[in-house]
Image 1: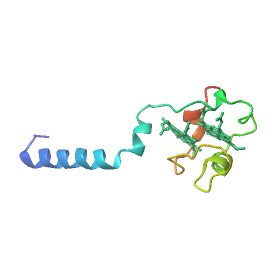
Image 2 (image 1 turned 180 degrees about the horizontal axis):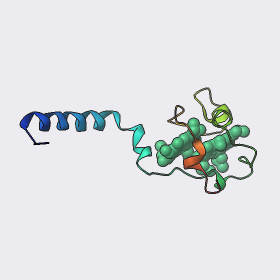
Image 3 (image 1 turned 60 degrees about the vertical axis):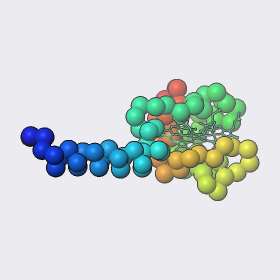
Image 4 (image 1 turned 90 degrees about the horizontal axis):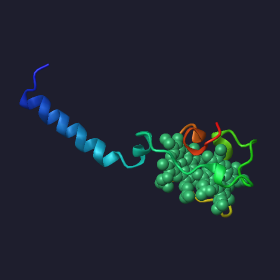
Length: 84
Ligand code: HEC
Ligand code: HEC
């Protein structure tokens, strides 16, 4: 493929779009969140499913659990566990 001005414009446009909508998705660039292992009394081994996490951390929220900025993510434990 040759780099015509047209493809260049397209690439720049794409980069700009990703920059705007990329806020939440920066997590997918290999960033890991805080581990639930740091509060084992709340997060025992029976908590495995996203739905369980969201009961406390979802938009509806409950008690003193910090609300997640990314309730639509799948596989919370991929990023929030160091035990797997
Ligand atoms: C791709 C990795 C990734 C996934 C998947 C993910 N998170 Fe996160 N999460 C992060 C990162 C990185 C942070 C820290 C940055 C921030 O607070 O915005 C974070 C922060 C949080 C926090 C805030 C912690 C605090 O101390 O305030 C909560 C709560 C949380 N995530 C819950 C969840 C839940 C629930 C799910 C599943 C629905 C989930 N996360 C899925 C990466 C992820
Ligand atoms: C019974 C409610 C409850 C459930 C279920 C729950 N959490 Fe939490 N979570 C909490 C509370 C409360 C805190 C605050 C703990 C603290 O401040 O020590 C917390 C803290 C966190 C933090 C911040 C880490 C830290 O210690 O600073 C993350 C990340 C998190 N939870 C992710 C998850 C994920 C992922 C799941 C599902 C596997 C989950 N939680 C399930 C109540 C819950």
